[in-house]
Image 1 (cartoon, helix red, strand yellow):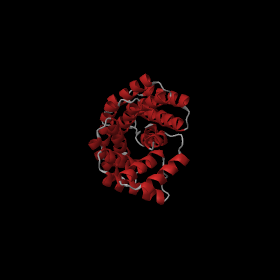
Image 2 (cartoon, rainbow, N blue to C red; image 1 turned 90 degrees about the horizontal axis):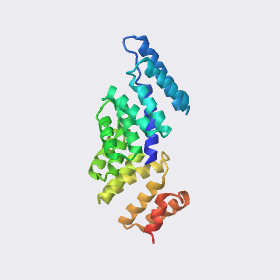
Image 3 (tube, one colour; image 1 turned 45 degrees about the vertical axis):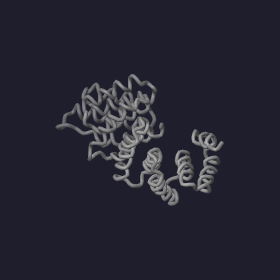
Image 4 (spheres, rainbow, N blue to C red; image 1 turned 135 degrees about the vertical axis):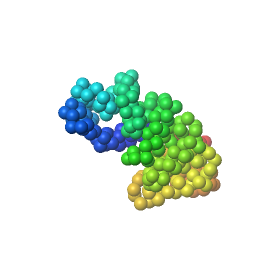
Length: 253
């Protein structure tokens, strides 16, 4: 599930850049915004130390700069300072509780801590903003959160909402197919897996370990031994050290 967090961090950095504004031309707000933008750029460049200083300076100038607190939280998250990260995420959310970007970032943090119940609540809030530019991503991550709680109908609904907003999200397609298979709906799972396969055929995405293992399981349920063997061979050749390949070998004994 770590890949989900990486996507959130990269996408939400871009979202932060579009959310800083000056208020009534106030110089303090303008300076705080400038330091926040500088911190975001440092964070993009992987310079955590200077990002931290820039975000901290922004909060000194304007204590209500929620995106600077969000930036500090993300830096501390990257530095594995979980307690500090949570402190600053909470500060950011307390200032702007309806900000979908902040809720999504906080949800991603909680997800990384395997606090799925809390993470789902934060991500659910983020999905409620119809104008949130990364709403499809938020629904996708909400679905993955529900998967960890074994709330498969809720996960199915979240993934479908994500795909309604963007029909070609490869992760949502695979995770929805996986969820449907868990719900004993192999025919519908196959439909979404085939949609992912079309993206692969068009060279828009590539198979990864999880998608291949899913292909094996769907093929087995549909009694297509040739397809299952093909996916298994690709999994063995491309991802021999993956957890999915270990599960495949175990299931083949």
